[in-house]
Length: 162
Image (cartoon, rainbow, N blue to C red; front, side, top):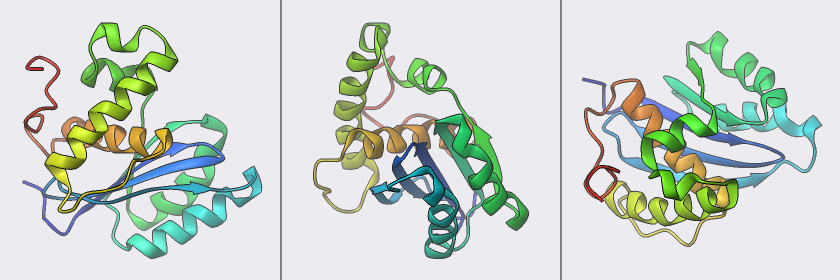
C-alpha cells in the first residue's frame, strides 16, 4: 500500500503541457495545462513544478520524447521514479478499440473518460480541461495502476465494464 502522502505526477509532454497530480491514495489532487511558449522553457517548467508539488515519488511521462531529458534531470536525482509510456499503451488499457482507431477519436474519447475520472477521483468539480490536461489525468490513472498504487480501475473507468 502506498502512503497517502506519496505523489504521482503525470505529464503529457509538449510545448503545451498537461499536468495531473495524484496522491498516494489515488485521488486527483490537481490538474492543469501549461503553455511553455517554447522548448527552451521546459527545464524551467519542470523545476517550477517540482518546487510547487514538493514530494514526487513517481513521474509518468508521455508525449514529445525530445523533452524527456529536462524532466528526468529535474526529478530522478531527487528520488522520483520516472516512467515513460507511449500513448498507444495507456490508451489500449483505458479505451475501447473503437475509441482509439485514430488520434482524433482517441483524444475525444479521452476527454469524455476524463470527465468520469474527475468525478470519481477529485474532491471538487473542475472546469472543462484542454486535451493535454485531460490526457495527463488518464496517463496518471494508467501510472497508478501500472505501478500498483491502485489495484483496480475506479468505478466507471474500467473499460471492461463500460
